[in-house]
Length: 79
Image 1: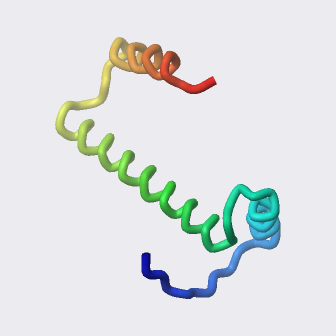
Image 2: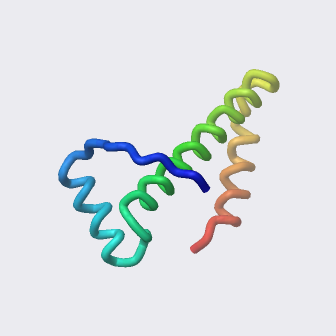
């Protein structure tokens, strides 16, 4: 993967948490940590867009459909 070097500014407490994650082995580097965070943000935005499209096409889910979704998601969530 090709990368580009940039400079960013973070609040000191965020930078401290990122550096701590790197020290604990949860990320290879500060850059890797931030790249992973951006990938997660992209996934969340894609999912939000999908939900908006589904609501636009099919309407808001009703109470019964929401209850079904909560039951299904509870069963599948890792514990």
